[in-house]
Amino acid sequence: MTDKTTVSPAARRAAWLEEMKAGYTGDGINPEGKLAAKNPNSRALAIPARCWQCTGSGAGEPGGVKRIAECAAGDCALHPHRPYQEGGYRANLDELKAGAPALPFKTVVSPIERARANPADRTLAVRAYCYDCMGGQPVGRKNPNGDVRKQVGECTTVSCALWGVRPWKNATPGEIGESCGERAITPDVI
Image (cartoon, rainbow, N blue to C red):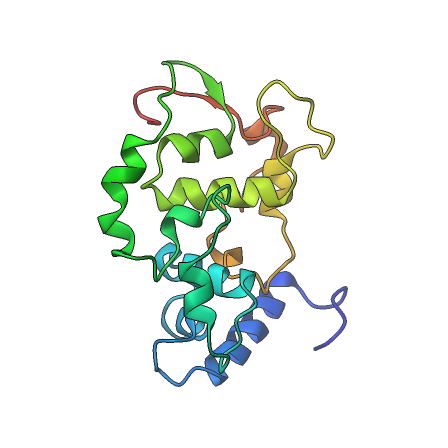
C-alpha cells in the first residue's frame, strides 16, 4: 500500500475493500469479505466483520466462528449483536431488553449508556463502540481527548469494518457543541 499521508482515507478504504473482495469466495464464512462484496455501508454486515477482526480470525482460519460465539467481552457495545451466538441474536432480544437499565426522562447520558439502555439498536451499538474506541468518557468526567464525535468522524482506521458505518462523519464543532456525544434522553431518543 502507498504512503498514508498522500492517499485519502476514502481511497485507502476502497483499496482495503478490493483486497477483502478478492479473498471472498461467497462461502459466507468470511464476514470481512462479505461486507466488502455485498454492502460496505451495512451495519448488519459490519458488526460481524468487526467481531471477526476483533477475534483475530483469518479468511481460512478454523475456529473463528467458535471464538465469536463464545466471546466474553460483555462490556463491548457490539456484544449483544455478535453473530453465531447460541439461539441467534433475535432469540436473545427479550433477555437483553429485560436486563437493560432504565434511563430517567431528560437525563444526559453518553452514547455508551444509551446503547446499554437500548440493546436491540445496532445504530446505537456502533455509535457507542466508536465513541469508546476514541476514548469517550462517561457523563460528568472531563474528556481529555477533546471532541470525541469529531474524532470519530475523522477516523482514519479504514481497515476497521465499522469505518463505513461510523457515526458523525460530517460533524463539525458547531453541530456538536462541547458535549462530546452526550445528549438528553427524550421520548424520541429512547
